[in-house]
Image (tube, rainbow, N blue to C red; front, side, top):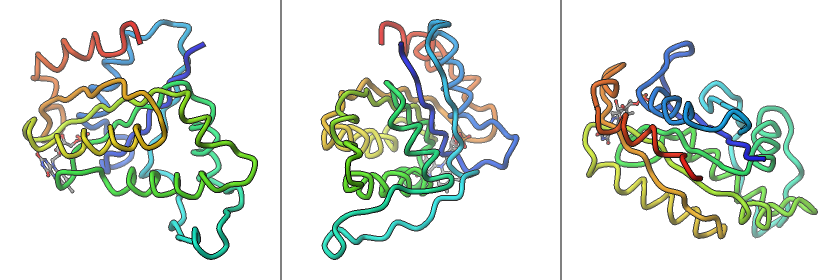
Length: 183
Ligand SMILES: Cc1cc2nc3c(=O)[nH]c(=O)nc-3n(C[C@H](O)[C@H](O)[C@H](O)COP(=O)(O)O)c2cc1C
């Protein structure tokens, strides 16, 4: 059974649904009822600083707290969806921070993170002021997928800006309705 994990990386205040989440929820509405959905807001979670001990200790313990929640959710999903606005032509820091922890999870003994990730698909839903500025982030997402042998299932882009701006982007709304169909 499909299990979609939506990682929302917008830094909007709690309780405020940003453009990117709105577009992702519109896309998710077309998922079959049997597909499981889990939504986590990265900026509302306490994620400790990543420490690069790859060339000293060499391994990492299994995390605890919110980071364990993120690891467990990541391991359990079949489809990972980055729901991330463009910040400075790139990933928001909360998503980048989560990704840095992949370097640790690759080195947690007996976890099998790399093999598990290769069996999942990676999707990106993003918004920004214009489409060209999203390209570096789309390229980064593809490269992250490639690094872990994950199929990249595509990017959905909408024109964002102030709250609800994307609700006027008819093309993005039409694409959202098809984004997960057949995936
Ligand atoms: C810190 C920050 C950096 C941003 N950088 C860019 C940028 O480089 N290019 C751009 O077009 N929009 C940029 N934006 C605008 C957001 O991408 C846009 O408002 C987006 O729709 C916000 O998504 P949200 O409503 O889901 O939070 C930035 C916004 C913030 C808060």
